[in-house]
Length: 324
Image (cartoon, rainbow, N blue to C red; front, side, top):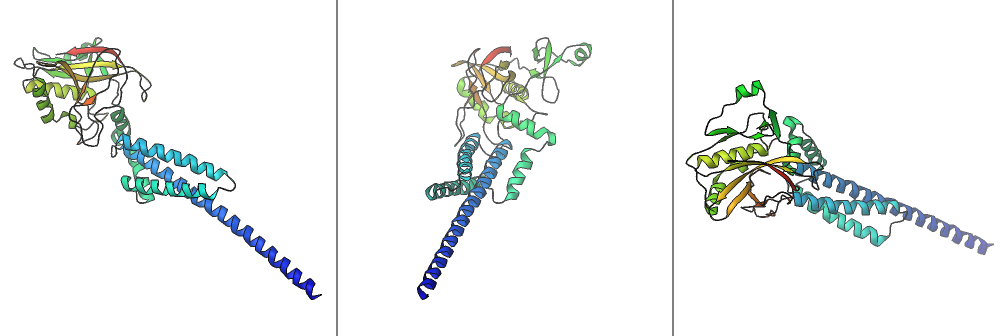
């Protein structure tokens, strides 16, 4: 009889230990999934913050792409781990390590310290004040449809041209700036063709590329108008150029763009695009312009940490106007 009681006690103890082991195993499994889920959510917040800060112009495109790509890889990895009934220890450990390093490094770079920072970045990016979101997107891609006003009797009355002041005409209409004013070129009869060095010296001092890009007030046509007039005032002969660009990887339709041309004494005809991207960044660029060729601007004065090669804006479908 005592032997029977002893064996029953051993069985009861063993059963309790097995149940405890199962409970601990279930608890550990749930805990792992909770931690993975938290890291997935934090990673998502980091990626969203990066995109929003990029839209606001606070971080570079290259940084945004790196954060987004790495973040998406971690998200896929994390969701895959969550779908497994029992994620392996090694897999879980590696995921926790890599995702934690990503979150720490990215949050420090983006200066995201709390959920409030994520919220503020989203609100800032989606702000519609003065069409900020639209203008920021246009700024990023540097593509916006050029506005042309058809000439009629009322328009004719408003036109004030002279031998030295002319409007830019396209397809029987007059090109207008973002705010609706007629793009007006003021020519200096005494202006001459510069050398490449003289042109670069002028561009470096000129602050047109430092103007803030805004869909409602200042777009590519306004940049080209200002640079033309500033150059002519400084005694440098300049041209206003309007082109038509085809679709590209980030823009599904064709669209207009404006830039400038200068006939240099030692390099021949050069095309300059001064459309700005971020305030405080030198955006004077040179581009090889030819129908059928990709429009890829290159910085004349590269900024430290920035690639001198700008995004391909699409193939040049047509050079509409070259007006001196």
